Length: 173
Image (cartoon, rainbow, N blue to C red):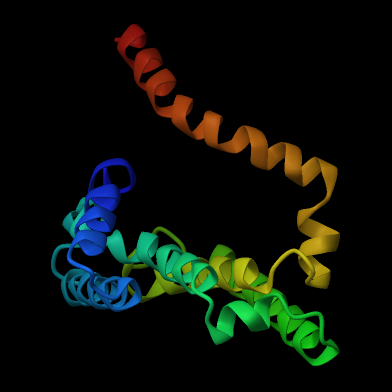
């Protein structure tokens, strides 16, 4: 519902009101993150399932997309072939992978998630995307045919796993 209903409505309203897209995204991202962190210790289940407290995760990607679409300094930097910029892109990609790996090993069912812990996978992913396809790790690892194939089937599997598990549980009872 966030991506297919709320997000297009937000984009449309922002465009019609002629507001700064990145400012609106940043403000909503901050509000959602504060709701998340502020309520995680008292209402963990509610925070996990409520879109208001999880919308910031989607908005990190939206902010990155907005930066890439605008003819901004970031956009120019990202598309620059200069060696110094390439080193920085590789650093972004490396730290993105580190954040993802640390999140994988440290986020357990004992942790209050999402909360602060959700920054590891969301920022890690954003850093790897921001690094672009020319970053060494992205080119070497993420362009691997096996990983690309897994990526292509992962979303359909995600969409189908819950209905199939629910159906199996209904049939078992």
